[in-house]
Each structure stands twice: as structure tokens, then as C-alpha cells.
Length: 179
Image (cartoon, rainbow, N blue to C red; front, side):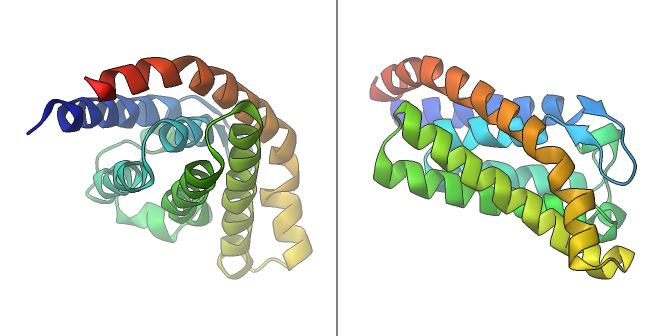
């Protein structure tokens, strides 16, 4: 294994651990808790190549599926994938693909990081809300009012944090990967 691949593997592990820790930072709300999961997804997708960020999020989901308490509120197991918030979980790897693809083609400057993470945020919120329609028997409007609208401002704040932190870490990451 070459040094670059080893550094990428270590960074992926660190970001997976960050994802697990951020999942436990929650504010309980009815139906959908406010978590720092999407903040961690933004970091993962902003710092890793697309395929690696996708892999990290799939590993995270697999860890939760086998019962490890990695999801919000130290939950895990297959039942979480059928609950009212499962749509958000399913959106995580897709968010990584969307954010990573935009950054791959637009570069990782402030504006592209901001744009990619805002688009990724909306992908996650909308997928989570759409899942609630059949699961909770909600109308589209009710699902959006429950799963998207209340999370836009907190989501933008998390995106701004991602952009600031990702910009600061980019140089370090690129330097390590170049070794």
C-alpha cells in the first residue's frame, strides 16, 4: 500500500469516527431530532474524494444496520431503516455523491464548498421528508413542514461551519496526500 492510499485510509477512519461522534450531538425534537450528522457528512464529502466519502457513509450505515449504536441517540439495528427518519439515513451516501461531484468539477473554493453543501443539505432534507409521506401518512406539504422547513436555518449554519473548517483543513489534507 502506498503512502497516499494509507493517508487516505487514515483520514477516512478519522472522518468516520467524526460522523459517529457528531451523530450523538442531538437536540430531541418531535419525530426528527436536530443532529450534527449532516455537518459531518459535509466534512466527509468536502475533504475526501467522491468514492471514498461514499464508502465512509456506506460503512457508517452498515455499522448501524448490524446493530452498532452509531446513529442518533445511540441507536442502531435494522428497525431504524424502516422508521420515520430512515429517509435521512438513505440520503447520506447520496449527499456525499452530490457534494463530492460538484466539488470535483468546480474545485474547492469558498463558493463551490458553500454551493455544494447547500445543495447536499437540501437533498438530505427532501429525501428525509419524502420518506415520511408513506411512513407517517403525511401529505407532501405536511412532510415538508415536518422534515425540511424547520431544519433549513440550522442546516445553513452547519454548512457555514463545514465551509470554514473544510477550507482550513484542505491544505493539511492535500499536503498529507501528496507525501
